[in-house]
Image (cartoon, rainbow, N blue to C red; front, side, top):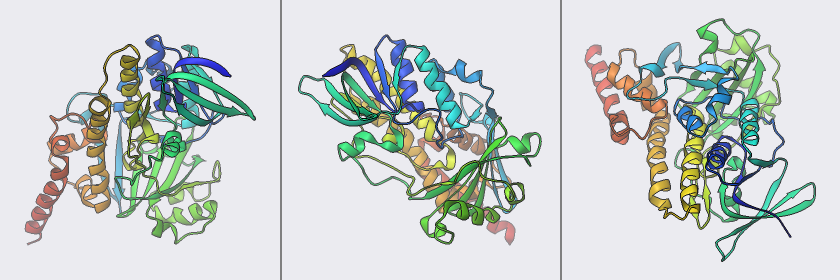
Length: 414
């Protein structure tokens, strides 16, 4: 028996799902979100980048977020053995937002979900999507379960924003090799009672331990700080298999922050995620599309996850609205090709980070300011601006500039 008929069913109430839902509801469509967790719930992706702000604003969610007084993020710092590379978003190349936030995702995602509820979006929490059937009549039948109760929903379109759950990717066998090197991470939060005052205690920092190992420091306005390590599995194998013991053993590796955190209790048992990067063979089909991490995830190093999640969620919602209104949509060209252009740029930066080239560029102490502005725009998420040479020629620019720097250093050494 069909419980309900809705225009769009969205799997997942994270930023991708709520941005899509809010936009579609604003356009007059009936929208239901199926979310497997109870909110608020913890997840990673706590550092945003400015491109997110455009998406939250267009979806009608920015004002509710501004009221939360999250920690403002105006840039980022990268350090290695005491050498710093600082980026200020207000000095980036091109137009766009010059600030964003660092957010505790349990609170942040709950605010977005509650705002969607206020707008008339229906959300079923603690509910699993058991199966999705694509019917010949261009309808979709979604079977869900909650506390052993089975429900069926007939919908016109489905947006899979299930993130790590990857509901349709698993059901339709769409998993593919990731585009970036496979790394793992371990993380938790602490009550940061030793936090320095002012900018030093507020600035997100990436502490490079080795070429492929780094530590993140993400302070929140509520007094807590997110801490975590990212590295290859071989590096993780040097430490305990117990997550709490492992993170405790790893902390001395960050000489910058070890004394700040060494005697603090973890707010929750550290979480370890193996093989962070994800990818799929197909992003859309008849009456469905994958958005956010349910489609693809690169690496946490440049905080691109929520940006791509909201970008894809908003674009999917726009195209979904067109299709449901009877307009022709070229999902390959208008959705996949567009998103892949941005993903390809960021993929290059992630790959060059782990080759060490981008680290050299970021930490260069006498940078050409125009080049730094152009790189800063990419770090801010404006990866579709072809006026930026570091977007337009992303595969060539980083190795080229590093060669120039190395040549200059060689001449100076003589």
